[in-house]
Image 1 (cartoon, helix red, strand yellow):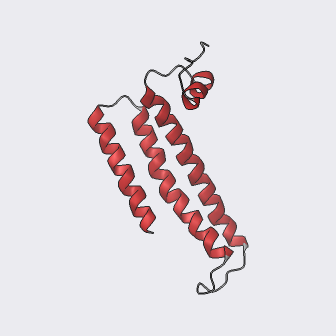
Image 2 (cartoon, helix red, strand yellow; image 1 turned 180 degrees about the vertical axis):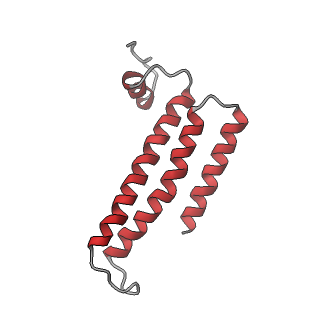
Length: 115
């Protein structure tokens, strides 16, 4: 495979070495958004399932159980929109479709922040 240009950042360089030569910058960033969203979703679901093995204290007491449970819900709530946005950004769509994807992802992330 060819070497990435010297001015390419680390994300582009790793994508070029491991996957293929990107045709656009959006292809690379869409791939990495997909990976980040997937990892966040899987980690969140794993944390949520892990809390089933812990002792459940009353909600008024707080503690590790409720903190892990909340993180286990919020990570997938943010990871899934980022993952789907990454798929849309990676595709060769018109510029308006990319902006609509960005808008929808920001709305989803904003609403999950309110949770």
